[in-house]
Each structure stands twice: as C-alpha cells, then as structure tokens.
Amino acid sequence: MGRLVQAAFFILFPTAARARLIASDFHFQIRNKTELTFEEYREQEGWKLARLDYCPLHPEGGCGISRHGTYMRKFPEPSLIARYYCSVACVSISLLPDFFASRLPGTLDEVEEAVNVAEDSSSLEEAAEVVRPDILYPYNLRWLLRRIRYVREALVIIAGLFPDLVYPDLKSFRQWLGCEKVLCALREKAAAYLHSIPMIVGLIPP
Ligand SMILES: [Zn+2]
Image (tube, rainbow, N blue to C red):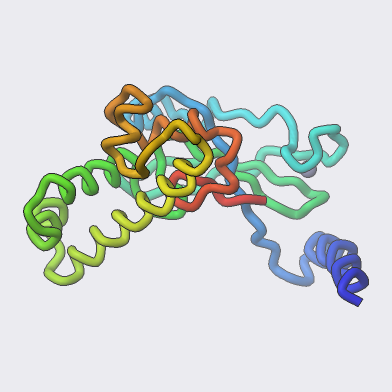
C-alpha cells in the first residue's frame, strides 16, 4: 500500500504541478563553488557567472533543465542568487555561493564572528550586547544562542565524518583546517556531504 501511494505521488505530483493544479515550490540548493568574497560577488554580479552544466537529478540529461532567473538575499546587502528549474522533477535549484549561510540571512563569516565573540566573552549576555547592540535583551541573546546552536550542530556532524578531528568547536577546526574562517572553508572540505550536514553549513537537500 505504501509503495502504491509513493508511486502515485511521483506520477501524479509532477503532472499536476506542470498543469499548475497545485503550487510547486520544491527547492534545493547546490554549491556555487567560489573564492569570491561577498563584496566581490556583488561587485562582479557573480550570479550571472554561476552555471549549472547538468541537472543534479538527471545527470544523464534529457530533462531540459533551464535557467530560472534569480532570487534576492537581503543581507548583509541585497544580492542575487542564480536559479535553475528542472521541469521533469518540478524543482528549482539555487546555486548558493560558499560565503552565504544556508537557510539563515547573512554570511557564514558573520555567524562565525558572532560565535567567536561569544567564546571570548565572560558571559553570553555580554556577547549578545556586543554583536547585536541594536536589539534589546533578551532578543539579542536569543539571536546569538540560535547561531551558537547552528554552528555547534553542524560541527558535531562534520567532526563525525572526519575521524582525525578531536573536538567539534571552532578552535579545533581552525587548527585542523589551518585557516581562520572555518565555516566557509567547510563548504570545500565537506563538499561531498553538504546535503547531509545541518544548516547553516549544509545545503537544502533534494
Ligand atoms: Zn532534471
């Protein structure tokens, strides 16, 4: 019975979506591998350079994947993300540049910097005042705690993928990777696992 329902879903859903009977907003992200900084990406309009050579769902071809415009990310400054559309699977695929956090406004560096401040502060309340003086307590603390949790969840999973890592914190990762900006570097280091890693390093899976 379960298989019948599943089969019906896969047959009927794309047909209905193509006929616009139901809204189709299936969406996943793939990596836009780039060494551009956010500022360079914006200056050079990096979304125009982003290319998808084949559909990740149909690498054998034949699905007629095509460019599907862009969408805007507002923070830290407005910029655009390139998007493609697979008309067989009825999904849009966005090409997220390495410096952007997934499913959270802003860049990975901004999040990492906030967590660094938290680690160097005598209290989380004090850190929250430093990183978000524009937001009142306790909302600034909640803002910071969310980011600490996102980083922690991603690092725990990634540490499990690499047995030579000892402890899932930014300091250990910095030593292991030999660089200062850990989260952005993990897009490259853990490239094969990005759809299995939690936000904000991991990407929305198909
Ligand atoms: Zn496709």
